[in-house]
Length: 114
Length: 113
Image (cartoon, rainbow over all chains, first blue to last red; front, top):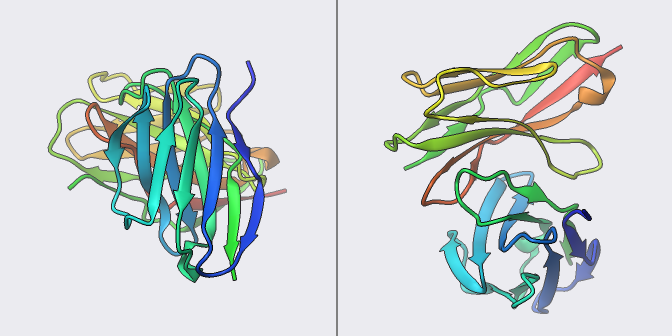
C-alpha cells in the first residue's frame, strides 16, 4: 500500500495570505489527523476527521480549519497567515481513528511565512 | 490534563551500546495507549513500538523494548545494540480512547561510531 502523501512538500507565503494543504491517507483509512510541529512548541494537535466529520479539535485559533472529503482525503486551511504559522504540518491516518490504533504519518508540508 | 514529559532533550550512545529514553505521563484514565515514534532527519515519523495500558507485559520489537510502569506513569524506551540508523528524534506519545494523541517534547538521540 502507498503511504500517507502530503502536498505540497514546501510552501513559501507572505503574511496575510492564506494556504491550503492536502493529505491523502493510506487506502482504507478513514481517519485523518493534523499536527503542527515547531521547534518551540513541539508537536501540537490541530484536528482530527473521521468519515467527513471533525471529531476532535486542538487549541488553535479559528484561522485554522480543515475538512475531509468522501474519499477520506483531507485539507487544512490557514487564513491570514502570521509569521508564527511557519512550521512543519504533519498529517497522519488510521483506519477508524480510535486510541487503540497506530497512526501513520506523512512526510509533512514545510510552510514558511515571510 | 493529559500531558507527556520527556525530560532528556538530548542523549548520546556509542554504537552497539544500550540507551534508555525516559517518558512520564499524567492521566486520570485507566485505559489508554502509549507509543514511541522516531523522526529521522528526513522528517517522516515512524512508529517504533506501542504499549496497551491494560497489558502488564512490556512490549518488545527486535532491539527496542519498553519498561512500562503503570502506577508510576512511566514509559521508557530501551534501544539495545544501537546502530547509526537509530539517530533521530524520539517522541513519546499518549492517547486515550476518546481523545487525541499527545506528544512529549522529544529526545534527540545521537549515535557515535
